[in-house]
Length: 100
Image 1 (cartoon, rainbow, N blue to C red):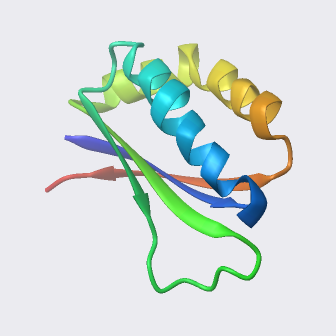
Image 2 (tube, rainbow, N blue to C red):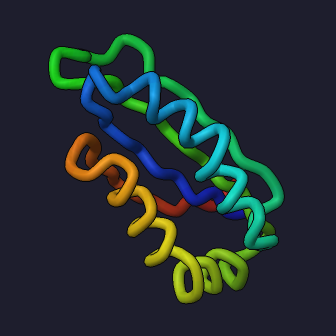
Image 3 (cartoon, rainbow, N blue to C red):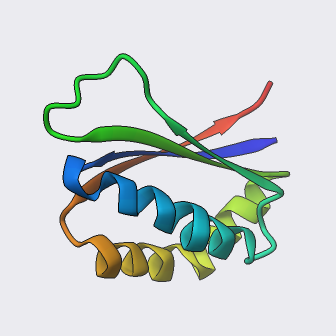
């Protein structure tokens, strides 16, 4: 199993609305591609939040084939939608992991 892990720092004043958007729009859109089998949204605990809250969105797929297809066909539009909705109120760091 492959985990597409996105760590996101969101400005404090936008965090509540961002969580609603993630749960109600973005995560369903990513799952709607049919390439991921599940998703999880977490808030990091014990983190300095002076400049915002930190979250992790994890998307699960069966193989690198599905992940690569997502990156090739959908990632750009999903990222554009994120910036359209929240502009510079967040920064994201992406990693890919294999469950062993």
